[in-house]
Image 1 (tube, protein in one colour):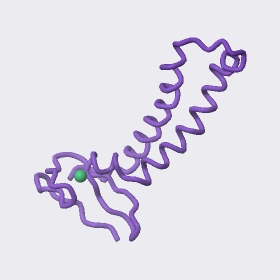
Image 2: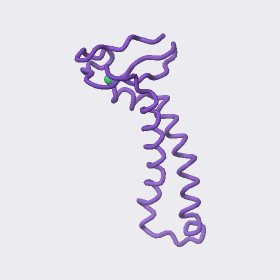
Image 3: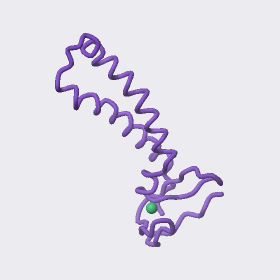
Image 4: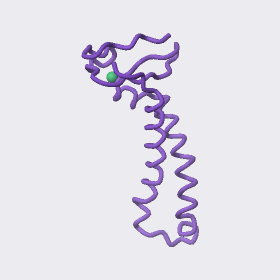
Length: 107
Ligand SMILES: [Zn+2]
């Protein structure tokens, strides 16, 4: 069941945030519902999908870019920030892509 888009300036029912711009449509157990940006960013299925994508893509990119260094045992301290960033980038890309695709237009 899809709830109706709130009108501009009304308080969002779920978190009491006043919507000024865009609402985001997320899948819920009973269908779809509209959320503010913060609630959409914390929507568990969205976070889970982004984490899975980050795990797969981040592992592939780490293997491609740093695999030889890691397997040779020459890991430098710089890998301590390079590898987490390699996982963070696909997480951000997947999350932003999902949010852009779920925009429900101006409230
Ligand atoms: Zn909210």
